[in-house]
Length: 97
Image 1 (tube, helix red, strand yellow):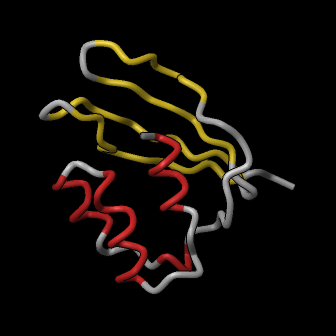
Image 2 (image 1 turned 180 degrees about the vertical axis):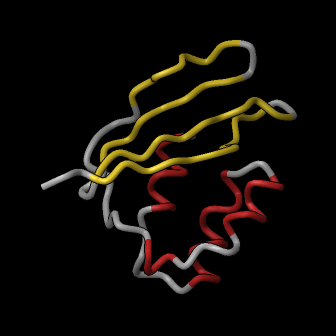
């Protein structure tokens, strides 16, 4: 799930509507609504460069993964809701060059 969210997130080439339609299915509904305000042109990453790495392994319905991108590291917080894992938060740390 973290990989799918990251792949949808790293698409600054899409319109805001297209971007949201791709990312929303991977999100908890309230988090998805929050992402509706994102301008994808401001997303710094254009591609994923690594596999998700567990920072907090799935336990008690929670997990956190870091995903390497061409512009930095995306952190994705997941929760098990209604029998499936969905993104509930994210953060991005830009690589300093």
